[in-house]
Length: 362
View 1 (cartoon, rainbow, N blue to C red):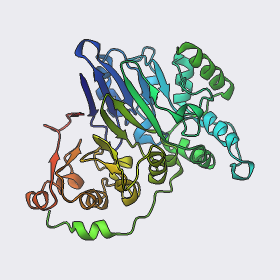
View 2 (cartoon, rainbow, N blue to C red):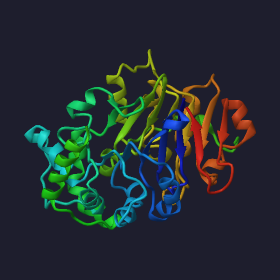
View 3 (cartoon, rainbow, N blue to C red):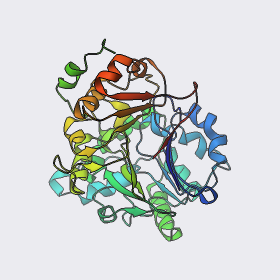
């Protein structure tokens, strides 16, 4: 029975595929679509997959959502998912309303984007696993793992209502950055209701890098990212999206993870492409994992940060570890150093050739 994570070469962003089940009944969950060019290159691959149980668009940063824009402009998309998870402006408002009055953000004009319009037009089930329509750890349904067909379960780890609400004042700027537009909130509300009904090297000083002070990510868009722990049988992968590490840590501790009893995970897809501000020493201290996946070409933001890799290596100095990169680029190739690998007990995995996806058997 297969359970694997595929990291497609999605520029500096994410386009990730979870696949599970027997060969004759393989099921898939797709997370993010990278940039527009990535979607166009990968469209034939998506069309050949057959059924997709879940499409998750984790948040509105362009390197995660931009590829969805041309898809929703098509008359016939390459797939029709059984569910779609995405928090648009409408869901931010709902999350805001669930907060205590003193903690609420001031709402501006109702905003959404082309993805919202596309979900309305395609009539895909939208956030149908959540009665409120909000994918959040504060939604009642997030208290337990959410089951997909074929035996996969997803435990929501991020975002919280508070993190979603904090994005509201920044929404217009994020729309402009991603070249997106508004959608009628009444149409969004109707689509959500309909969806619920339809569902049934030694040159690197690892020690010094690991000791650098941790400064947490404060970006509102990243705080709104949907992250989850996917489990199939006794195997699991933590899909970190661009989530804030304090939210991930709190959610994992709520599941029983601690420094004394770290949570066993077969693979950790690092949050925010290996940013030093999204991988805290505290987060690493409560998980038991030796395989770490990093998705980024390194363009624009120069990810992954060496501090993140150093924290991984120093957190677990005795066991053999694997760093899995979907691009061989300046920021990843520096770790392909035999002396460093011997000293810090790790290996590096890269695509077999430029432009190829990386498959991780879980």
